[in-house]
Length: 137
Image 1 (cartoon, rainbow, N blue to C red):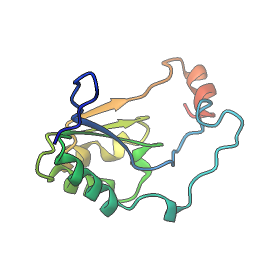
Image 2: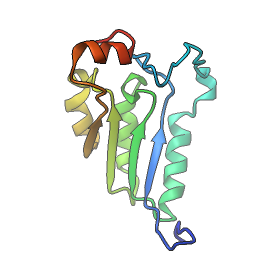
Image 3: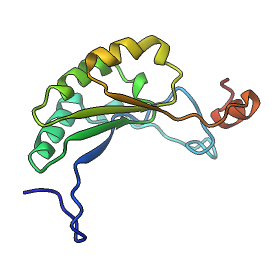
């Protein structure tokens, strides 16, 4: 069985949000400073996420994009990626990040199995960037 919609499109890609945490307070995520973070016990454990991905490979999922919040703030991320990358059927693991922590993790991410990184960058103008992200530049 494969994941196919009524227009006969096959789904081989999964966007997997691994945390609601972030090191920024961007206007679009915190428009009125009313964002309430989940309790840690409410966030799926890595073991649960690995189980889900393993099951979805059975119906054709081959590519995983890790997102959040900001995925790089979650503890033991690279160990999780190593396990994720080793699942039979997974051909590509990508990561979406705000880029602020890449200097700490880039090499380890590559070694753990990340194939591509997408950096969400709201502006190249420092003042505008600080305004959007809540004061970070």
